[in-house]
Image (tube, rainbow, N blue to C red; front, side, top):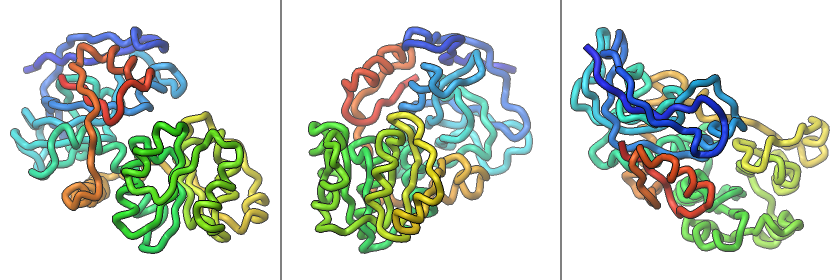
Length: 327
């Protein structure tokens, strides 16, 4: 027995118009799988990078990493889910831009009553990124001084709010003065404009000369070398994104000269590779949501058949807050 699936497919890289919405048969869930009727789909800028071919995928391919919905049916050997469960995911491979999906049950996490489908779809990928950065890459403690690049961005705001709730002091950076207020509202003690060529000096002025225990750098090419100048001796520089392009190669001796620094390049998927770890990390995120440490601002909702408009709005920076696709 099969049902129909409407999903977004690209056969070539390019502008938003390369995305096609197709209707295809969807087989019943196989062993270890659950069939999900999706109610909300998350948007992330990596979707744009993959659509453009900056992060190339084998084609034809779907797009999207995260969604929430309801279990419609389960396949053989699934013992931890049942029809009617509200679930979400962020690490089941690309293809979340769809109204239904059959997925490995181990990739799904049940949603608590206090977390809506839209909040889960908008927060899971970004929130789980913040979770490993705060808990695993460095266990943030009260009194830590942190530098968070792109503090007004999706991950940046979550990271800032959560770190501040843990008692850390966050100095943020933004790429435009217009985003300063959003970074301050997220909890930054001060905000530095990355358009200033001497932004590391501005950072030190904001801290009274104290360098950061951890620098969280999602910008990459344009910032990483100067980020090293903002880390305290024996401090940690975390390169977890490349919004401006791939980070430059760094001679290990430079880390010695800058203060015996630690440098790491982590990502969210290895931190959530097995079901038990993924669900434990998600529970930590859901707890932070419940405590009000992490929140979501839905800036726009687009029906799935208007996905082209959603990408156009995101690329034009017309939306403040998260974008959610609604099947």
